[in-house]
Length: 417
Image 1 (cartoon, one colour):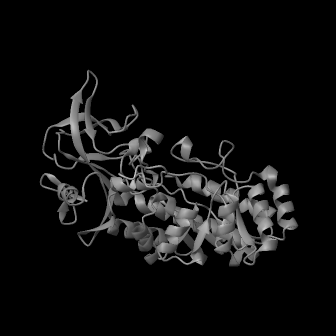
Image 2: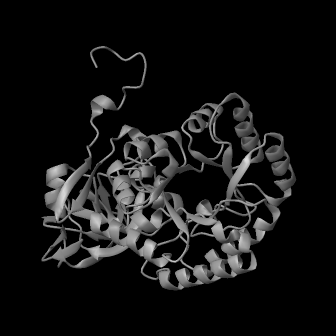
Image 3: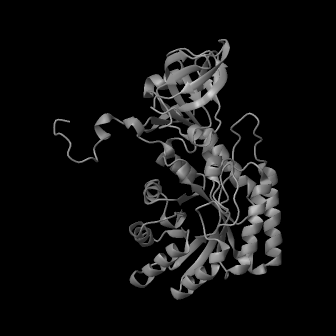
C-alpha cells in the first residue's frame, strides 16, 4: 500500500478502483507482506529445531492458508471448521495440530479419527481422550496445555495466569498423571500461551523459562510448545518487537537448557504465531455514507462496522485509519463509525485525518489478523469480499455474500422467499 497523488494505491489499483470493482466494504491483503513476515519468522529462529504452526484463527481464508503452507509453515487449529479449512488448503493431517478448549465429545472423536495431534486443555478433557483409546485404532499420543503466566495488550487476550480459563494449573498435575497412567496415554509434549500482542522480548523469555522449568515434572517428551503471541506495532507509540534480539535470546536460552539436559537434544520446539504473520498485510476499505456534527464530534458514518472489524469496540484497539481518497485536504479530527445499532460501533472515537466527505473511501490498516475471522452477521448484514494483491494485481479470494444465502439454515421459510 502506498500513496500516489491524492489516492491510496494497492499495486496498480487505487482504493477507489478496488471498491468499484469488488464492492464496499472490502478486505485487501498484500501477498508480499505475508511472505515477508513468514520469512522474517523463519530467519529469526533458523538455528532452532523449530516447527512453526500458523494459528489460523487469525485468518482462515484458504488462499492465505495455502500461501503460508508454501512458505513452509504448518497449521494450528482451534475448531473442527478450522481443521476442514486447513485440509482444503492442502495441509496433511500430520501437519495440523488442534489446540482447542471445552471440546465436545463429538468433535474430539472426529479429530481423533483424523489422526490429528490434540493439545488438551484440562484434566477432564484428557480423560475423555483416554476413554476413546480402547475403542479406536490410532495414535495414543497427545499434548497438554499448561497455565503458568500471562501477558498481553488487553485483559481479554491474556491467556495464562489465575484469571485465564485456559490450561492446566500446577495444582492439577497429580490428577493429570493419574489419567495418563490409567489410560496408558503417551504424552507427546507440553504447551503454554501467555497472551497476544507481545512486544517485549522479556515477557516471552520469562514464559519460556517457566515452561522449560516445568519439564522437570514430566516424563521425556517429543516437543515443547511456547505458543505465539508475537505482536506488531499498531499505535504510533508502539515499538516493534526486536526479532533479532528475541531470536538470539531464545536460541541462547534453549542451548543452555539442552546443555544442562542432554536428553532434550532430540526435542523439538513448536510455535504458533498468527497476528505477527497477518496483521500488517490487511486493510479494510469502507465507504463514507453520511456526516453529522454534534457539539463534541464530527461523525463519519460508513458502510462497515463492528460486525466486520470488532477489535476497537472489544479491546479499544488502535488501528491506523486514513482517508484513502482525501490526501491534500485540510486535516480535522473525525470519529469514524459503522452502520450497526450499537453506541460502541466506532473504529475510532476521534482521529486527525484528511477532511472526510460523503463518498470517500476510508482505509483501516493492520487489519489482516482477527478482522474477517471475527466478523459476524450482526444486524443481519452481509460479510465483505476479500482480495489479495499479488504482483500488483488483485485476486478475489472470497466472494461477497448475497442475501439469498443469509437465511438458508433457518426452518419454516416461505417458499416465495
